[in-house]
Amino acid sequence: MTQRARNWLLVAPAGAWLLVMLVLPLSVVFVFSFGERAPSGGYVPAFTFEQYANLPARFTAFKNTLMLAPLGTLAALLIAYPLAYQLAVRTSDKWKTLLLVLVIVPFWTSILIRSYAWIFILGGRGIPALLDIVGLEGIRLINTPFAVLVGIIYGYLPLMVFPIYVSLDRLDKRLLEASSDLGAPPLRTFLSVTLPMSLSGIATGCMLVFILLMGEFLIPALLGGGKVFFVGNALVDLFLQSRNWAYGSAVAVMLIVIMLVTVTLYMRLISRLNVQRDDAPLM
Image (tube, rainbow, N blue to C red):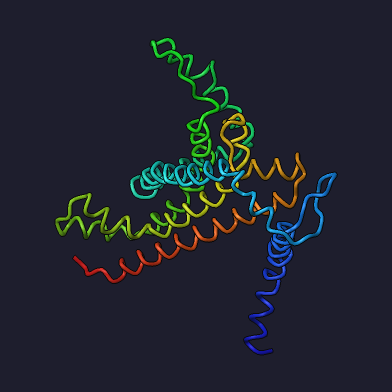
C-alpha cells in the first residue's frame, strides 16, 4: 500500500463524519433557503430569492448578535488573560491544578441553572435591591443588553482561559529572565515577549468564544427576557414556532456567511501578526 493510500485511509473516517454531519445538513439548509413556506408550515420546493429579500425584517437580531458577540469576546479576553497569566506564570505548581479545577467547576453545572442564578442576581431582589439600600433607586439590570453581556462572559470565560493558559504555560521562562537581565522593564517584557508568544492562545480562545456566541440563544432568551435577542433566538422562532423553514434557512445561511467572512479576516490578521513577530529584529 502506497503512502498516499495510507493517508486517504487515515483521513476517510473524519472526512465521512464531516460530510454526513456538516456538509449534508448545510446543503439542505442552503436548498431550503430558496424555497417557500407551506400553508401549514414547513417547506415547499421552489426557487425564489424572496426569503433573502425579507432578511432586513430580522435586522435587530443581527444587530444585537454582531454587537454583543464581539463585545462579549473582547470582554472575556480582557478578563481571562490576567487570570491565565497568573495561573501559568505566577502560580506555583502546588496550587496550579487546584485553581484550574476551580476555573472549570462552572462547567459541571448546566448553563440553564447558571443562567437562572443570574436572573436572581440581576433581578429586583438581587443587586438592584442592594443598590436601593445605598440610595441608588430605579436601576434595572435584568432584561437588558448588560444582563446578556454578563451572562455570556460568565458562561464562556473558561473557554477563553484555557487556550491562553496553555500557550502561556509553554512559554520558556528563561526568555522572561533574559529580558529582565537585559534591563527591559516589566511592561516592555510583556509586550515584546509574553504577549507575542501567547498570540496563538488568544486566537484560539477568541475563535471558540466568538463562533459559539454567534449561535447563542439560551442566554439572551433568559437574561434578555425577549427584549434582547440574537439570531439564534430568531432561528428558534422561525423553525419551531412559526415553522417558516425557508425563511429560517435564509437567516441561517446569512449568519454562516457573516461568520465565514469574519473568521477568515480574523485568521488573516492573526497570520500577519505572526509573520511580523517572526520577522521582528531582536532588541
